[in-house]
Length: 374
Picture 1 (cartoon, rainbow, N blue to C red):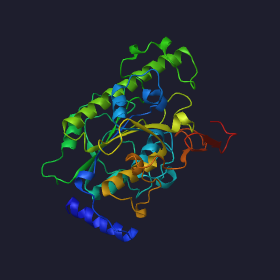
Picture 2 (cartoon, helix red, strand yellow):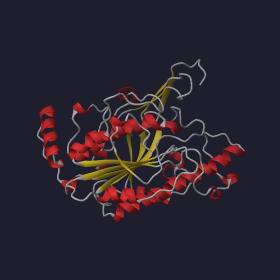
Picture 3 (cartoon, rainbow, N blue to C red):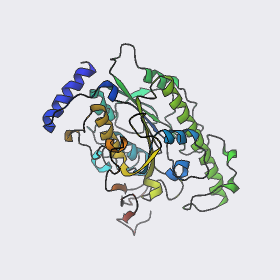
Picture 4 (cartoon, helix red, strand yellow):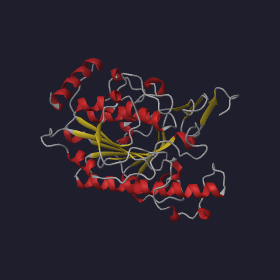
């Protein structure tokens, strides 16, 4: 069945579910989607959010051309759970990925399931890190290293993402793409980039880090990886422009959860759960603006479905998050009241459950077993 007919069938079903009238959004109004994910990058180590050390010219340019979310959050400061939340639109206790490297529940659905019936090819390059495969049937796109522990990171090749953006011969002219590029910087080991650009003695350390010679040396290496990540972002955006899709594509950049310095990743502190999020879609998303709207990863999938379909996602899709499309379009300056965070344990460690909630200004954290060793 051709994508247009599939879309029409879905539209009719959702009309019956919602009891409303659905008019198909035109092809010109439906964006392509490019999601670029950094790996273990503390949000406020980026100049975008006050970082005073790393140089990120490509991310800074993207921010000038788009909308910066000052209050975006992941639900769990670990790679696998937060990516599962991003792709499924569900909290960890719904999709079942409640600790790092854990699979989602069988039958869990994600972006490929939701966007393919709406006429989208949905692919992923680089780091995937979520399972089972049946819950995340992304089309594999070659060219980027998917192993965040490799030393050094393998050289990347832009040909795969270029082919994906250009489409296949005979594609439906109304077909769109959704491409996720999961970079592996600045995840440890910090071996990429040029650390000599950051003399350890001259660094402005974040206030939550203990100031020791070792901290300064490692922080310089981490900053070099942030800059290597930014360089890759620039190359990816250049390919998007070269394929002629810069203006008809919603670009989302996010920094994932905090780095592996103490007090960031594996915690419910703000430097663990707070993420950078930038959106660019020329002519649709206001340029050079910032928003204080509170959003979290579970809201991304329903947002993309609404933009692809032209109306909010049906309740039958079982999202925990809700669409912030109105914020993207500049029609609203608020979204959710609270963003939620949890921690259970490191995969190899003892149980240490923590729960957290924030309104974007204040954060409440509760340790459920404070007598146990973290």
